[in-house]
Image (tube, rainbow, N blue to C red; front, top):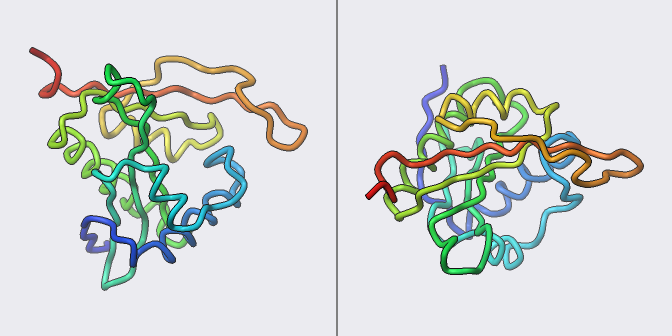
Length: 166
């Protein structure tokens, strides 16, 4: 069993974060993205708060971050989840540990809703999200095309039971 520590992600972590992101992209079941941006592009995409890495023995095994769903102020407490785990440690609890920590960090930061869009073929990611309190709220059919293939996306949501409940 891996001993996993979760900590805040820094710019210095990005080369390994990018490597893990590219491995996820290569699966064809993690994202519609086809390439990972440079640090500046990644930094613009994700919220400055709630950026985490999981590591063991000083090696980064995965990362998690939130992106805004809208720039409208009424959606300020809603974040889109991204969780990526290095191929060599998938199935060892890294994703669940990261997502659990991301949920706690998001609530500490005042977010009341997290959402995730996951390809139905990505069963591991769906399981991790469900373990962390997410539920499937629908399927967005033929949402986007990868090459010549239309892809459906499951929309999952987690509502905080301690933020935004007043």
